[in-house]
Image (cartoon, rainbow, N blue to C red; front, side, top):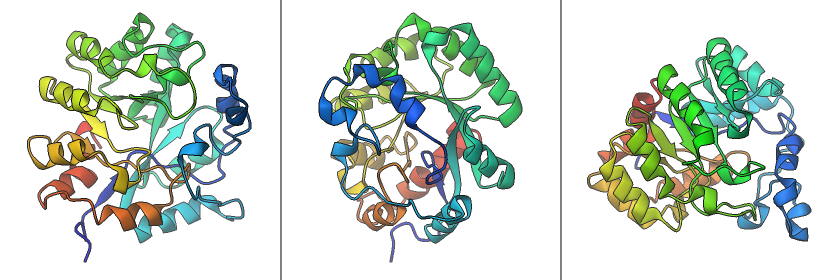
Length: 289
């Protein structure tokens, strides 16, 4: 029997298969990909890191298929990334507002235009978070760079979390913008800002935990990690003083199938009291769902 049977699941990183063209997003940081292999990776720019990336090219109604997969694994709600040019995700939000909620990936190079866009998407689509890939911006923008500060202030004003990728990025671009120590300055200067670290924080997992202990509004989600690769330090932290700080996020369909995630998830050694917090309660609180 699964360790988390009958517990509601909220997935903080999910997409609709074959939904919206990602080529423009990949092209936005293609000038920084200097090795030939990266330039030839068409599925995703960190393709080398994952085995058995789901091939869903022949899926029919992709929204219906995604809902079937969510139902199969007990996922009640999922966060979709949106932009003005993401028609399938926008359609999913319109058709299934009880199942999907939205986030927007920001570019700090755009100044106040980006702040205005975040406010517009919040008013029109009810976005619940702003996400970021600091190493994937061109030019790159470190997490503590002043170009992010208007966006941080905007998130505080709208009362929504900021969710940056932290740690060594998968795509072969410089890691400096995502060094975990950059968060110390941000958490200090914006104590009201709820931050949820994405994509692992490796190799600075211990520092990420230390900062979560230090700052009450700093959290961590398990996005882009197959459960068998969850850092042991994160599991130990969740089982002790960090049960309210660790949130579930998958990586379907970008690189992981839900079947794989949930078959491995049942072997993660979370204590019984941690599972409901990890799978849904923390997400409801932090994202105010």
